[in-house]
Image (cartoon, rainbow, N blue to C red; front, side):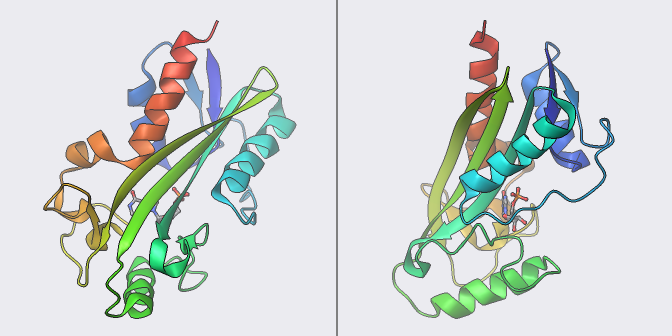
Amino acid sequence: MTLVFASNNEHKIKEIKSLLGNSFTLLSLHDINIREDIPEEEPQIEGNALTKARYVFNACGLNVFADDTGLEIAELNGLPGVHSARFAGENKDSSANIEKVLFLLGNSKNRKARFRTVIALILEKKEYLFEGIVNGTIIKEKRGIEGFGYDPIFLPDGKTCTFAQMELSEKNTISHRALAFEKLKKFLVNYG
Ligand code: IMP
């Protein structure tokens, strides 16, 4: 089966190729000649994932999936959520994003948070959504140098290491993205 992954992020494409295995031919946006940035302006993660998948489907008519992720902090009413990448500004600066989160949380006792990934799949013109969630806590200071984004301040429930103190292989066994992609894979493997 041929599927477009609506991404040009080489790291993600490689990761997903290895997850899905050889029975799927995965094409990137680059492979199908989509060079422009697809707008991500929806108020919900689901909306952004669907917008990206629909944009590609309308452009090429191929089966396609797209993902979108946000960090949702309970005390901040779900922020940064859909704004996670640009929380502190357009340049997507992870350090500035972390500083903003820590500033807004201050000494708040409720530091519960979750990462949530939604994948939108358009297969034979039908739309499907798959969700992956990992619950955790926002700690008060950065710990670790691995990973990216908010990893240094996210302590997953039941762990003593932040995502930034884990090997990628360990993060991949529990991460929001891995859980969502496992659901997608299961669905595709069992599909007709
Ligand atoms: P995207 O939808 O995968 O591009 O993710 C949007 C933003 O959420 C990223 O720019 C990061 O700031 C944050 N994010 C997504 N996944 C992770 C993760 O696994 N660790 C830390 N931050 C993440």
